[in-house]
Image 1: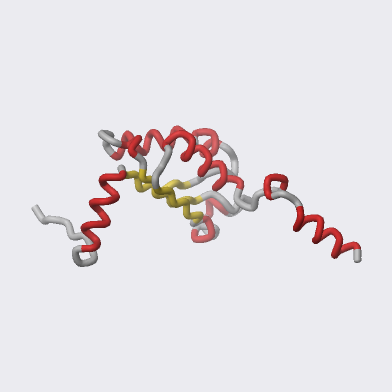
Image 2: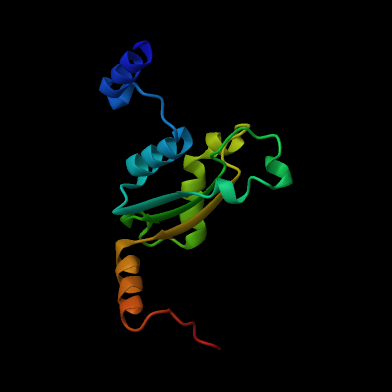
Length: 132
């Protein structure tokens, strides 16, 4: 009976009082949303794909490797390198922390670039590159 009461109390607790299962992802999402106001944001935790690497051997963290797609007009007029510097600056503390972000793969684009990519994909599938 006691276990059932504990489960009921937990189920009725507001989400804001519960500990997050993805604190690093939550922090990333919050920082990106407040700084870049993205129209599209995807955060993929790929840590499980890298858990066997030697560098991850003694890490207790399950949130070390991320793949992030950000569409924001904050990137308008900026080259990829500058866009990535902006995002890396947001996570300076998280990348320096032991057990923090170890790897960050970024895809940054503007709304216009996203729409152009979607149009290209709709024209027949894969995007092909020109040979020079």
